[in-house]
Length: 350
Image (cartoon, rainbow, N blue to C red; front, side, top):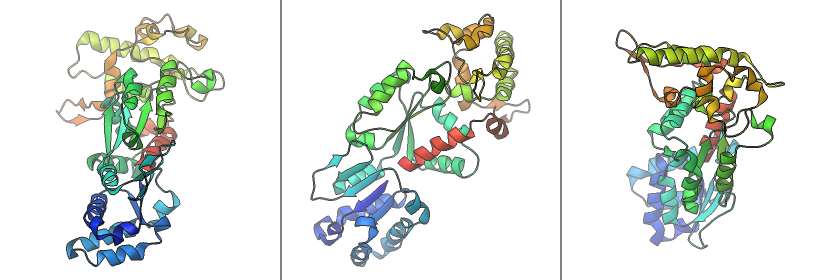
């Protein structure tokens, strides 16, 4: 968040303790702190700082210096908090600007950004493993480790109700993501799934919560075919019948993976219902899938275990553990640009 502190708060000795609490709370967080409009009242802060203990002067000065980093000034945080004691508290309808008291601002600064996900375990694992290696993945891992962001289980189809339960100030510290749930890209269908429309309606209610809808049906549709084959043929802890079902299912996906709807860049695998197959359809399945409807494995899907691949590891014959996925496979699958946009959206909200 960008936090602008009114200079008058530094000049009021009665506020000094709470001002110190606010600044100290921000030291270990990635917020941008400014004194006065555009940070032009920095001298007021410097005068106040001379009266503080020597042990906190250096970290608080570094905090203000960090806020002048060119990266922050070129791409400022998406949320802006103005800290004052002279105006009534409020959050604007966009969910991006707010006026808060010192006490409220301390709570906001200390609070992590809540990532409201349909499944707090599997979806969080998807973001961590699909994040491109390097700066974005390192940042995400660091942010999770430092509790700057906190994955929240939105309860699947109850995600809208989860958002509805939040107060305006909680919504200010939220970011949400959901599955597309469609058999073809929404750009083809020209409409969103009913469930997504319900989620979006709640997310757009003032103050607004950013809602990212996956471009593919669900997180399992981002599993590369090579990773699915590695998982399906694994013998560790898998009964023979279950392994046969998995391997037959994945082999049935091969022609589905090579079929693209007219004018589409990506295959039907991106929108096929992995979990329940064609039996999950409450509406008519697009004719693009007609050639595959008679396949018994594609008809019934693979059940819940497939989405847990993101959160699980495989055990090798020598007892070591590894991942089902490889970064090269994820990059070749064409998903990187979308994942980059998702991580950037989280980062701007934090």
